[in-house]
Length: 213
Image 1 (cartoon, rainbow, N blue to C red):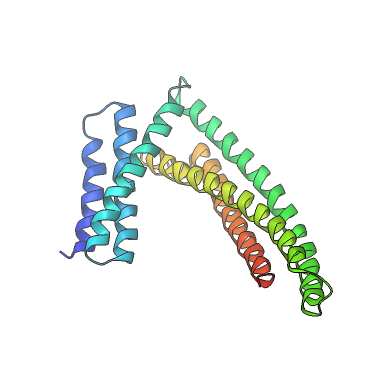
Image 2 (image 1 turned 45 degrees about the horizontal axis):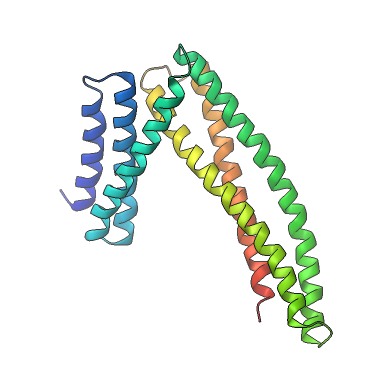
C-alpha cells in the first residue's frame, strides 16, 4: 500500500472506529477529525509526496476536530436532529442570500472599475495623471479584495462544516430524506456562490495589477 492509500485508509479507519462506542457529541468530533485527516493528507500529498502528506494529515486532523466541535456545539442547542437540520438549512440559506447579493454587487463594481482603471491607466501613460492617482484607485480595489477574501474565508469554513454534517446525516437517513435533500440543495448553492466569489476576487486582482507601476 503506497503512502497516499495509507493516509486515506488511516483517516477512514479513524472515522469508522469513532462511531463504534461514543456519544453523539464524541462521534461528531471524531468524525470531523477523521475527515480532516483525509483531506489534509491529500492536500499534503499534492504538495510533497513524502513529508507533505504526513504534515497535511496532522494539520487536517486539527482543523477537522475544530469543525467537529462546532457541529457538536450547534447540535446542543436543539432537542432533536430534525430541529438541528432545519436550523442548518436556514443558516445556509441566509449565507446564500447574502452572498448572492454581494456577488451581484461585485459584478457591477467590476464593470465600473475595469472602465475606470482603463481610463486612468491611459491618462497615467500619457502623463495626465500622477502615480498617486493610480494608487488611490488601487487602494479602493484592495479594499474590495480584502472584503471578498474575508467573506470567502467565512463561506469556506461554513461549507466545510456543512459538508461534514451532510456526511454524518447521510449515514443515518435515506437518500431521499427531505432534510437531506434540502440541505444538499443549499450546500450545492453555497459551493457555487463560493466559486463565484473567488472568480470575482480574481477579476478584481487583475484590475489591480493593471494599475501597478
